[in-house]
Amino acid sequence: MAAVTGFICALMIVAPLMTHCGSSAAAIVYLFFSPICHQIPERSFAVLGHPVAVCHRCSGIYLGLFLGSFIENNFLHRSPRIRRIWVLSAMTPLLLDLMLPLTGIWAGTYSTRFFTGLIFGMMAVWLVVRGTEELSNEQEM
Image (tube, rainbow, N blue to C red; front, side, top):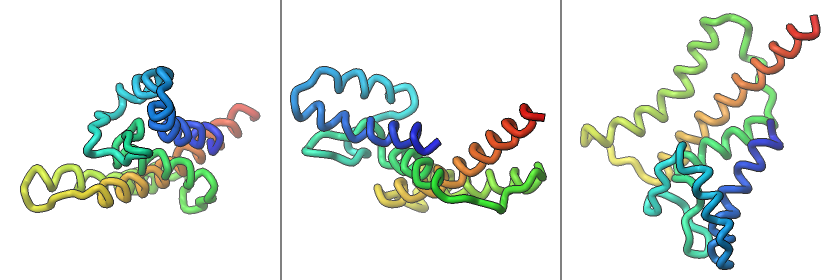
């Protein structure tokens, strides 16, 4: 999991570097991420003056997936109830940061978008890793 998510994190950083060097291959990387991210330059971190391939929130999610894959989480049990609570806990800060600006109560910033994405990504990877382990164990039986 760390290798896959690390590769994705590297891709999103490499795109602006390739753009800066004049490589047309950067367009392929941006195109790869376009179905899953709006890629609005004002809502993306920049490297050498060029936006990374995803927005602040997606950057946080991908980095969270990567970092979370190195941390073992023993709180997830086979209980579907615990997992539902875990998913809701992971999604709540992200959804609040997404929805509250629409009401005018809250104005999200690049840091709130990034950190809510980071939290979600870390919690999500633990579910994916745990589910993969369980599936693997069931296949061996």
